[in-house]
Amino acid sequence: MRFGLVGTGPWATLTQGPGLKAAEDVELVGVWGRDDSKAQALATDLGVTPYSDYAALLADVDALAFAVPPKVQASMALDAAAVGKHLLLDKPVADSLDDARALADEVSGEGIASVVFFTGRFEPETRAFFDRIQATGGWKGGWTRMLASLDAPGNPFSESPWRREQRGALWDIGPHALSNLSALLGPITDIRAVGGAGDLVHLVLTHESGATSTASLSLFAPPEGSNFETGIWGETGTALLPAGDTPAADAFALAATELVAAAESGDTHPVDIAFGTRVVELLSTAEAQLRP
Image (cartoon, rainbow, N blue to C red; front, side, top):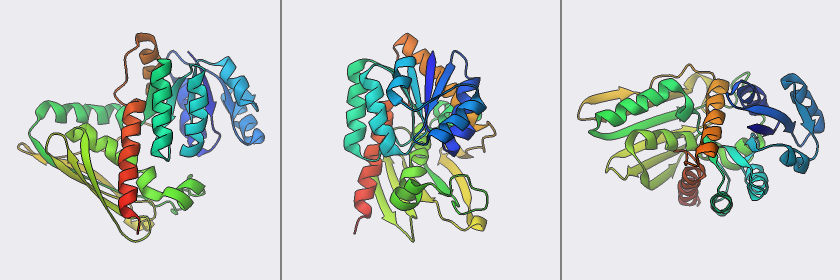
């Protein structure tokens, strides 16, 4: 399947681009970016064609992968879906529920395939843990702690405007928390949010299974206080999500290959636009609760 890459920032350079080049059944055709010089540089590194015209890229590919801010992604993906292009989306799929629903409706109406890149869902060791947890059963609750440090020296995302100025941890790492806890304990039916200093937010989640879980999120923890842990507890004890060692580019390659498979089979992927839209709905609910 012929893919185009939309975006030229750190995520596109470090993950999407190399992942698409490595993916089975994928041919990366070209790169589009808002900055022509960056598109040229990334395309040269990847050995593909730079595009300054998004419509021209759409005409040359069967599928698009996105590495742009959520608002930009929602608009450009809607244009791609309208002309029947399959979508490999980043999370969150949009920064508003209306935009997410509009995109989901377009994907459904066009009958195209979609996958959202929630990283843990495509790491083999993390998937194996999810499978083991689901097979065991009897789980009563869980937790995740994602305290990141955007200002840590060398962080490639430190200059990201949408993370700094608009949405913070809830919208950047919150989707990963919701995805992982859903995989462990089942669909989330209710969310409660309490804010802390800066972008710190604590979530209490109720799952369809009756289990409850919590999430603590920040992008601006002190570097020494940065900490990540996800766990689950129940009738058989406590289990911790192992740290994944699969490179993000390899996980993205798997996501691209599974998008191709979904497009060819007509089957929906477990983390498609419908799931991505549900995550945006939960984020929107939490954000409304945090407003003064």
